[in-house]
Length: 306
Image 1 (spheres, rainbow, N blue to C red):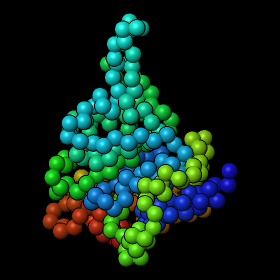
Image 2 (tube, rainbow, N blue to C red; image 1 turned 60 degrees about the vertical axis):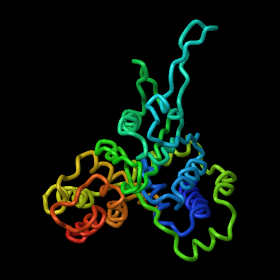
Image 3 (cartoon, helix red, strand yellow; image 1 turned 180 degrees about the horizontal axis):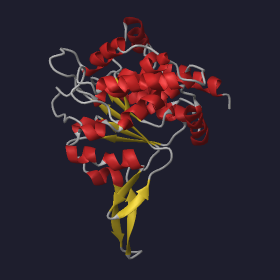
């Protein structure tokens, strides 16, 4: 497998589904190459669900979609054991979480109890049902979509669950040229249904191994640690990043480097992924008057390059 040719074809294919969002699409691919879960945060109707479905099809992964609602129960995700008279035993019926890609659509419309049911699955790649632990497929990704919290019927995701997402991105409205293409083109759902799979699970695993082998030199690691220390200084954020978040930044930067055709991480790779990788984990300090993403960008300007 020619990794660079495959990755270019993958990005090109996704860009035929979501127009004018090359940076966001590259972030999504980097997130999955790094083995992380993805949160897409935006208003309804900008293509969040379409992008998630296109990612699963392009990566050649088994796909399952759950529409999160206020009455969704944890067992609706994980499945239930049902007594079958013919077998005179309880038989487990797996839920939609037993898929390689779980699309948790409008995740913040479910109750906190159901949201938290995803935690073990996202972190441990397994679920415990009626005392029995069951492994999830490999690979296992959660791609969640989320509506703005000021919309009716939404619940804020708990910090512990936000921390399980490697990246959070927003698509935003299309520009005028991209919107004209949407207005005059084929229905996006029809386009997604006919997308070919460009990878399979084995090839994806090989690419993920290549991500791990991307070299990070000591000066680059110093830079990552300087950024992590800046988040903990109290100047920018109320609480700093955890060690797990620091590992997430490095993994995402390595995936970004691979997508750029390099076998080493450059400071540009760290800067390219940092806001998407850490802003959802942080709360701006004091009366900054900026959101977390803007605060991360301001911090980036203040921390010297190696």
